[in-house]
Length: 180
Image (cartoon, rainbow, N blue to C red; front, side):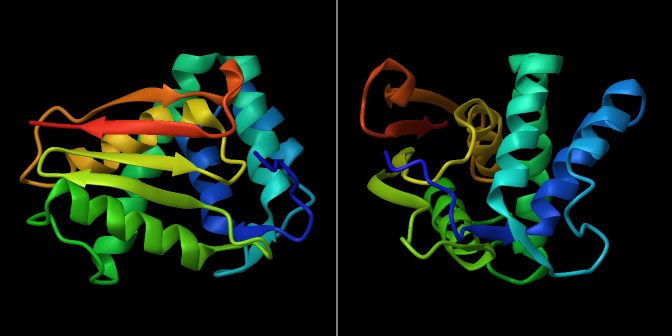
């Protein structure tokens, strides 16, 4: 996978959501210092994706993978709420429709000259396979993907597993998301 971040930006709301996910206290203060160089106050501002990636990496390293997964769940809830407020998704949508809307939202809120992001490889009535071609932290996605799908009224117990993993030598992370 091409892990370069040159010229890649994303909506500052993603960074704010990560900060909100970890709450307050000593870790939060340290995390805020890590991203103090980016504009988080101006609405709809695009910031370097490296700030988001660095913050995700820091959370996983300093607070642990479970906390990063929980942060992913928080970001997934916020993403669903934002998509719902813009009318691009509703709670009556299927799990696949929610994942399609997530891909569109990511394509809109992330600017990458190379066009990387998410690719939906397979769709089924109770599952989808997604490929991560962008530098999003893989552990964060373990929380985000099932959470965003679980917010559909048509879905129960969404789960995610790796079909292929960059950490294990694959070119891309391929995630299977399935639900009842």
